[in-house]
Amino acid sequence: MITRRRAFPFFILTLASILANADDTTPFDCHVTVGDVTFDLTSLDREYPASRTRSTPPTTMFDSLTFNICNDLKIQSDVAEKDQCPTGTRACLTKTNQKNNEPDRIVAVIPLAQTKILDPKYSASASPMKHLSMLFNGPTYALRPQSLNLTLFCDSEGISEPKFVGYDGSQLDLEWSAPAGCAVIEGDKPPPNGGGNNDGDGSKNREQKDVGSGVGWFFLVLFLAFMAYLGLGAYFNYSTYGARGADLIPHRDFWKEVPYMLADVLSHLCSSVRPRRTASRGGYISV
Ligand SMILES: *[C@@H]1O[C@H](CO)[C@@H](O)[C@H](O)[C@H]1NC(C)=O
Image (cartoon, rainbow, N blue to C red; front, top):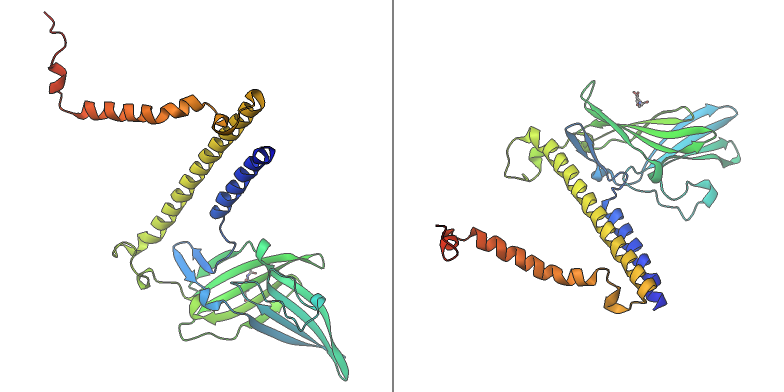
């Protein structure tokens, strides 16, 4: 009996967390909407490299970036753990120092963008060239916040190699061109409602989504309140009357009546909809 009593609140918590998580949006799923324009970046879901070499006599500094904006980077089994970024990293910068006749030395491993704190910011513009700008965030490194600034140009011809523009110790600028940098034309997708006004569709969909999640929250709150009522009522019945089984249900007599009450209400509704004629039949006739 005691285990059942304990399991109940736990059950509520589990259910609540499942419902709450169902409403969570993933931080970045490679679909970007800027104003009324959408971009589909799912075709870029792969690890890409970019690098630069700087002459720092008597050595050479090799800055190497690996990134996948759509997913976490894979952990490499052939590289020491401390020489690579931790799990959950989407952009990792490694600085390697090279000197003639000496083995290379990794001198810095910098996570620039991490899924948990990605907080992506977008902007899109058509000048000087059509592009989408994205800023992804990472943790602090050497006391400075890290981020990846990716400018993705629209190139319907094909995908270029990502270009390492610069890194100032905090933000890495990267330029890239790919078909994914071109806005998705709504007309390319199967029409959601048999065509119609393309300009309006985007905002309408977004509105519907907002309304949908609002209704979801309303029912979640309602559901939680009901669960709390059941839980507390059951506990009250248990602790006060030592109730067991079905007797645990709070206001049991009331709830037993509910189906009959509903049937009653329904039959009243139905009879009042029926022709008025019946009202004049029988009863008193005022004189
Ligand atoms: C991102 O990098 C581009 C150059 O690649 C630069 O023009 C732009 O100003 C940068 N954006 C931010 C927010 O720093």
